[in-house]
Length: 439
Image (tube, rainbow, N blue to C red; front, top):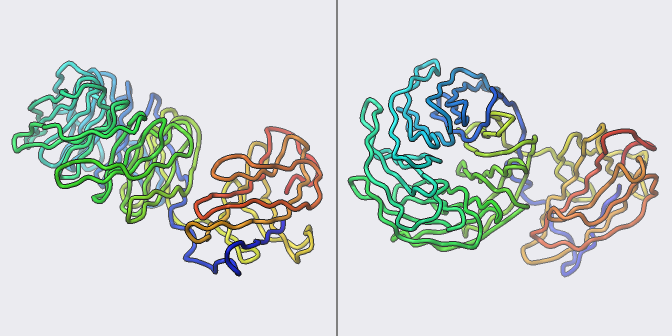
């Protein structure tokens, strides 16, 4: 395939920029000890997974990101949320209340205490002074904890109704993702009592909330990733939304990039600019359901329902330069430059060697100036199993065109803007081959 760019509005294409961001995902490892993995957190020493009827599980991680299972403890079922303050580990135990644990230097768990106010304990978080639990239709419950890890119930706030799914705070306010009732803010007094402040609802199902000290981010199951600002009084202002499909379930960030666990659609990365505007970067999907995401500054961890605890690294992608354009290499095998099969140019890019059920993707690193458009013109060809193995063009995740079978080089063009994500992908079905089995 040979690629060239025809420029509109300016005389020459933009020169090479800073290159792709270091936010491309590489899957490392997974460990599954049976049962549904629903949440993940860590304390800098160990990584913990909340596992429905399987209880609390502890893991170590080596310098390469490989996971080793250590221990488990279960005090009834329904383990749906986990958080640690560095001293104790706290579990939102569904219909079984909140549990506290200690962990020794080897990662072995010791159960300490439980409190149950008779509601559904879904997710847990703390601010260093109090522990807060999102309890579905039961609202937000606050707790204190003593030096031995024993819990004391303080109060419940459910004045606004609805379902409280996730909870997080920034040291100033408490934020609750409330399903179909939007994002809510609360203040907390010196005794741990909560006062409702504000709600914003953009009409989607708010499943998770997290912030980086500048903006607040919400994972909205059917609405994508959202950004908010919050003023000194706790009043919310909606900024931006990006969706690459549905199933946005959990959100977390490392100060550089934002990560979203997308249930049936894998793990996604985003950047955010100084105004809170989101830019989608990458996705990796190893199958099953990505329920929760957290990182320790070195690796990213995912609680995946039936694949267990997963680890990822994040960094710069592999790239190739062709006709003064930079392409990001993704998929099961990298595209490469060759000079045997070409159109009129001295060389062309060819899909990596893949087998049945795999894909080789070539993604354009978009350097078009903001607000402008370009026409990307390229020549493509294929030698593959007709109507089963395809070379496809996608823009912003939407299928545009494809070729299959024995196709000689033909010209194709498509107008793209500065915000568009364009890629070509050669993909094979589950069996057989045809021609040279490439594009």
